[in-house]
Each structure stands twice: as structure tokens, then as C-alpha cells.
Length: 458
Ligand code: ADP
Ligand code: MG
Picture (cartoon, helix red, strand yellow):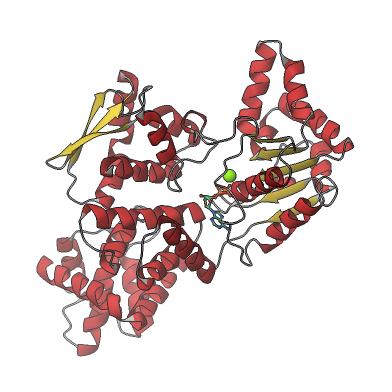
């Protein structure tokens, strides 16, 4: 189970970093065969995938694996099937596993959760029970509630937009699931725009366009996810326009999501844009820290894992832009603690989250760190850089070292040389000291955060 969980967590992270088509192409049917002596053996479905993972994704996979367990040194790839991927009894287990929160979104066709309703395409896990409402999404939530009371008339169409991982799919599917519970005979269809487009292409090829039109025009509720993709081709927009009108005229509810508002979808046809704008448009923004904390607590409860408050707070504080990533971080912390056989502590959280932060950003440099730290503590830059033993530069210098390590991933010798011409042991000592102190000293944490803000603001 552990290796499955580990791989699942790796995939959840990789999915965020690479494009969906690449992800689907290269990571389907992969899994961990075994882990021995720090070497992880990964199953790949064919020679193609093997070569591709080795040449293109090896570093990323290794990086992610190592953030979860530092014992891992290398990866080998073998052609084969992960347990249960064939038609063995394990299949269902594996599929179920993939439906847990860290795993794929259900628009991932080949990996979709077996419990996804084959007619509606809805995933029953997306419900209002598990949907947390805060100021970032309360308008969208209120609109959803209004639609449930009066589908087809209250807000039609309902257009919801916002960044990745902020709950658009969850909310739209929750409306579908709730309507279905209230009225099991209600005809509902959820479809990601990309899949809808694929169906159109197939229908044209197979001369079954009429059947497809029927399928989409007979529903009571049509949910189209990530509509921005449809704007890429005229043919698709044309087809969707007619379906939209057919439904709209019959007062059937239409719910649409996008990563941006209609007027910002450059190639969206005017006639579709004006249809969308004729309904209700709301956005989902970023959850604030309290809401992020609440989301984490709820997820931890669902998993029946007890996690110390400071760990939850730490995660909530660090991951700001994406609820899926928030869940991913929580899972990484849980898994790191399992793998290292130790309780969930703030150290583990820090290790698995900070080391996981994306690689150093180009626009920051040691120079910027030195400047930000000396500005913040109102000391001379040269005192920080040179061998000054003035007492009031000791702590700022340690902080600068810590930041070089955390933000630039500089080596200890480099850090030592750059700051006060010290050897690497001083650098190690400084970084460890600050890391330790951060565990208990929230004032220091705030100071460091303020310095980071300075560094990243410029
Ligand atoms: P989007 O469609 O906006 O990219 P998703 O709906 O796929 O985002 O959400 C990403 C993940 O975050 C999902 O696992 C979802 O269940 C979870 N999530 C999103 N919003 C909330 C929320 N308000 N409360 C609880 N979980 C949420
Ligand atoms: Mg989505």
C-alpha cells in the first residue's frame, strides 16, 4: 500500500507541473514495482514511455520522490504493469485509490474513478457536504443554491470562472449530484469541454452526429467544464452554440466553467459571449488563510488522521493559490511521516513542503537577499558580507544564510563564502539554528516572511 500511496502522491504533484496531454500520455499505467536500497523501480507500459520518462521526466520524478523520502537515490524504469492494472480483482481497489483526493481529477478519462456515474459523468465525491464556503467562493455558492431551487430559470446560464484548483469542477458537479439526489430521473450530463470536442470529432468521423446532438440536447442540466478550450475552433463553437440554444429555449439549465471571464477568452465568438453574459457570471477567488485552515482540517478529518494544529497552520500559510495543492501538501506530509515512521511534526511538514517549493526563481539572487535583510534590520550590507563581528549583525547574517539555502538552494560552502567568508560549517550551523528557532518563534517567522516579501516584491 505504501508504494501505491507514494506513487499516487508523486503523480498528484507532477500533474500540477506538466500539461494535461503530456501527463495523460506518459503517466497512465505507471506505478511503483518496488523500492530497494534507495532505488525505486517504476513500471511503464511500453518502451516508448520508458524512454520518454528516462529522458524527459527523470529529474522531475526523482525530485518529487526525494521531497517525500530523502532515502530515495535513484529510479529505474521497467516495462510492465502495476499490480491490479489488468483485469485482476485488484483493479477495483486501484481505481478506488485513484479517486481519493490526491489523485487525478475525473476529467482524466483512462484513470477515472470507477464510481463515476457512466450516464451523468458525475463523480459522487463532489458534494456540498465537503464543499467549504468562504468569502472567496460564497457568491458562486449562493448562485448554486439558487439554481438548485429553480433550475433552468434562476440563473441560466451559470458561468463560473477562476484559477486552477479553486473548486469550479467541485461546485458544478455538486450541483449535479444534488439535483440527482433530489430528483433521480433528472437528466444530467457533465462533460469537460475537451472531451466534448473529442466526441464531436468522433461523431463526424463515424457519421453519428445526430446521435451526439440528441445526447446533449435531451438533458435537463448540461455542465461544461473548462469551456475556454472550445474557443480554439470555430466548428466546435458552432456545434456548441446550437446545443446551447436548444437547451436554453427549453429552459434547461446550463452551467459552464472557464479559467477566465467570457470577455477574456480571445477567440470566443461574439454570439456565444453574449449568451454567456446573458446569464449569471461569478468568479472564485483565492481562499484566505482561515478558510485554507478549515479546508485542511476538514480533509484531515475525512482521512481520519490527527494532525497537530501548528502543522495545519504551517501548510495553510505556505500554500495559498490552489486548493488541490493544499490537499497535495497535506498528503505529502502524511506520507512523509508514514515513510519515516515518525509522528506528524512541524519538522516533517517543513521538510516536505519547503523542499517541495518550486525551484529557485530566476529573479532572486544572493544580492537581493543581502539587500533585503540589511534593509529590514537597518544595517550596512558590508557588515553582513564582511567579517564583521558586530553583535547586531549575527542574527541577520544567519537569516541571510538561511534564505540563501531555502530560496536559492545554494550550497553551504557558497553560502559561507558569500556571507562573512566563513566555512561551510558556519553556514550549516546558521541554517539549522534558524530552522530550529522557527519552530517556536513566530515573531522570527513573521520577520522572515516580511523579508521574503521584500525579496519577491522587487
Ligand atoms: P478547479 O475545477 O477550479 O480547477 P477543482 O474543483 O478540481 O478545481 O478543485 C480542486 C480540488 O480542491 C478538488 O479535490 C476539490 O475537491 C477541492 N476543493 C476545491 N474547492 C473546495 C472547497 N471549497 N472545499 C473543499 N474542497 C475543495
Ligand atoms: Mg476543473
